[in-house]
Length: 171
Image (tube, rainbow, N blue to C red; front, side):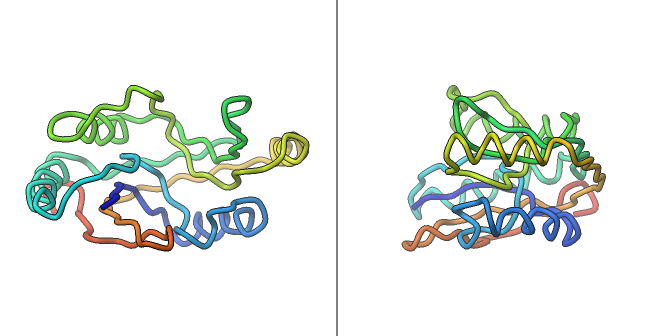
């Protein structure tokens, strides 16, 4: 079964992202706005308890994640994806590195670019138009997220929370 690990931001930031996602994100109906910390991975039901225990340990060692959204950007030309770019922060880096070391597989495909997707699967012309307009708008948002979620993918492609882990020793 497919799993992933994400952070869900506040309702305020989700509302701001969804205002764009409704129009520009082909995955709008599959998952709420989120920050991916561990991309999709496949494990068996027998492996799940070990992964959950490992996630509990990571959450206990982690500090709540600092989120600082500061601009709109895209992954073009590699991908026609538009996102809110998030400044790198040691709290995010810790989570990313912990979730890409044993027993999790490393990510050799992409470097870690903290972001929240607001558009994807756009044509080249639409991407250029939308990114051009959005880059003219100022976007600033700061918050602290104190939970990470283990998600699982349903047969219809949508994602649901399997378990939530409170970040920090107070969790």
